[in-house]
Amino acid sequence: MEISEAKELSKVRSKLIIEYINEILSDGNKLKAKINLGIHEVDGKDMCTADIYVPYKDFERHFNLGITPEYISILHEQLLNDLIPYLDDNFIGVTRFYSLRSNNLLFDGVRVMNIMGSSIMLNMYGIDENISSEYNKKYEEYVNNLQSTDKILKSNKKLNNTSKILLTIGIILLVVGVIITITGFVNFNKTRNNMMNSFNNSASNMFDSFNNSIDNDDDGREFVDSMKESATSVTDSSKNSFNSVMLIGLGGFISVAGFVLLIAGGVMAYIAHRREITAYTTQQTMPIKKETINDITPTVADAAGTIAKSVSQGFEEGKKETDDTQNKVD
Figure (cartoon, one colour):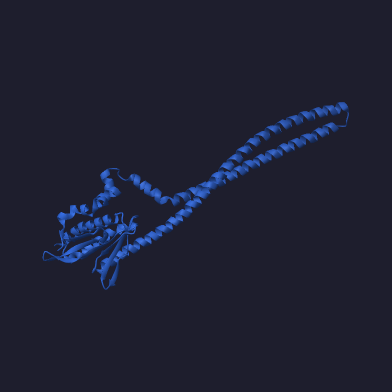
């Protein structure tokens, strides 16, 4: 067997094992299973084999993987690489690579489990330590990225909450500021009209009182009193006008403050949701042809269709399609 042939066959056999893993962990019962990868004699030749045991289902399968022993490391590496995506799965998870030694157990491998408590001990006893170390390195990188992502999510959550507060306060201040400004303008117009009317009335009263003072010969007392009244009326009107101008200024200041808070809240909201916005933008630029979409992001249904038959079809039926490519180990 050539190395290129071993690599291609390892991809196929790894996919087969992943199919069994998915099928076992998709069962509604809590199952404990074992999958042992090893080397056995088949038809007088040593070959890489896979032994699958599911005691609860009374299920047992032994497969000749068609790969010669010198290339078993290629199969191990391929299978571990194919297990990495489980680290980002919401239903199925996988552990670090570890070893167990006891009187009746020699285990080098990983444990694959689902959220219902089912688990599969995947044994690759005798694996090259470089391959298992590389897998654990990728595992640690994923965990570190997950922790970093968690910190980013927490930071984004704080930013998002802060942005909501700023946006709420900004909207309130902007509305209040606009109302105060409008009130100030309305009062200013009323005060201006009142001041003009007061000025005209004062002028008329002063003119009348002046004539009355001359006619009554009261030494101008009536005229002086009229002037005082006019001055008081004009002063009151001026105060009202000043108050209206102050309202306009206060409303403008509050409106500007509200607008600034709205901008700050909007910027924080954008930063908090930048990843979602970027993802959405990227999604909109992706081709919409079905075959292209399937190449880029296969749907769960498509993936499930290639993984295995549904659990309801049973363990037996799900493997009929592979019978012509696998030989039973003696």
